[in-house]
Length: 403
Image (cartoon, rainbow, N blue to C red; front, side):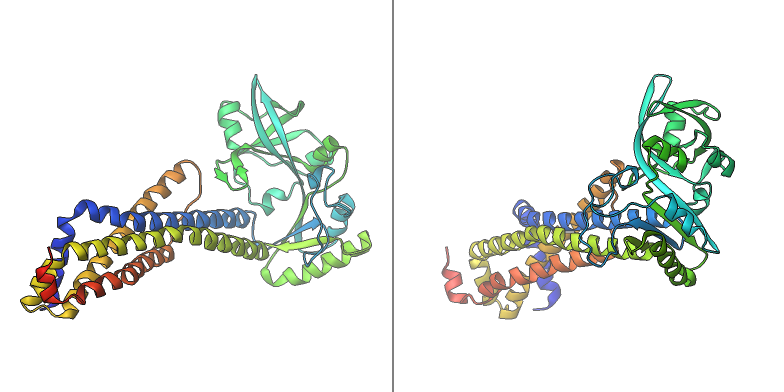
């Protein structure tokens, strides 16, 4: 009996039991849906974080307070740039920033972060304030819609000027922003620039960020603490040299190496490791659904063998070989599992689209698709073997007598 005839019998059997077969596929469908969607969220988060890090500019060294990364055991106890920092560790200050200005061929900016509330004409918006110097816009490649970033003169004079995000521009100031006065934490700031729309990231809504001179931020906090110092290097080849200079200069100023240097590649590597571990954990949890689905397929196929015992006896009586019966029931299990996997993929794709509408990053990769389909087919084979073996092992005479 050829494979085409066996395949025709399989398709007829699947078509004649649609409801039962759909319930059989449901476990596989849910498992594949959960695995692919969970992995897509993890991949989306990774890509989003990478995009945000890369948008800061290329070849940046981030200098922060805290002992070197290799096992300091320090613990955050508050907003580092606004008076908090790491327990027992001296925060970065203007003294450290000024020392790094001696390095040749780099762009340097202190960065201070703080949350705030912006008010204008009775409207309010929660904002993320970033204090920096006049070269920060070049380091981070901030895209201006109109106006300008503040210059050295604004910074030296400690003028209360601000560059606002697109949402504040379009919703709070009604698209007419330049030279208007807004109040941030009840302090007046003159709007001199507007950023282009950048959207939501894992770091928050970039369109509600505002940028002011770092010395103004320090005056607001009444201290010189700095969250991070950005050091932008001209090329990847110069990073090691500049890192050595930073270490030498800061150790001289601070007396010891109680600071951290991190590059974009290190952050991306750490992010990739974390997301990879998360994906494995989430995928493992979702894989339980596939296992349950496989057990469901085996149980349904065993019931099907029992119900079709007489049919199996007739097939054997007219010449069907043991391997034909084995192939028939094994193919049924694989078809059900594969169909459930494909439906699960479709549901995961639709789920990914829904998540994007709610600003949840997700990205279905070819690897997750291949793994899901391969695993679902494998489940069909593994859990279809025993029922197929039972069917193939039936004695034709006993099967024909079965009622």
